[in-house]
Length: 84
Picture: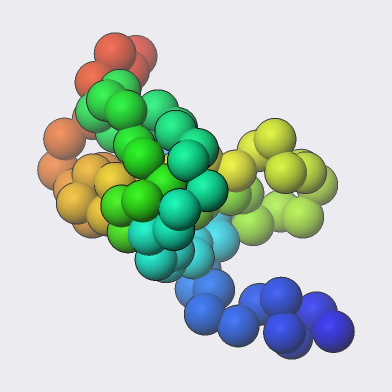
């Protein structure tokens, strides 16, 4: 069962930690998120990535929804409003 849940999930590094990353197609759920990379609204209708710590200690509340371009640029520019 866990293999099914891990389908399409890759591991990447950021800020010295390991993160699980899943690409998400746009959908019609109507949800809105705030991208940690740019602090802008991210509609569930837009394709994006969902990122969570790879340590296995967190839960659903540890997931973050990023614009795909913001996640790709995370090492070149710090997230807006970031302490880094």
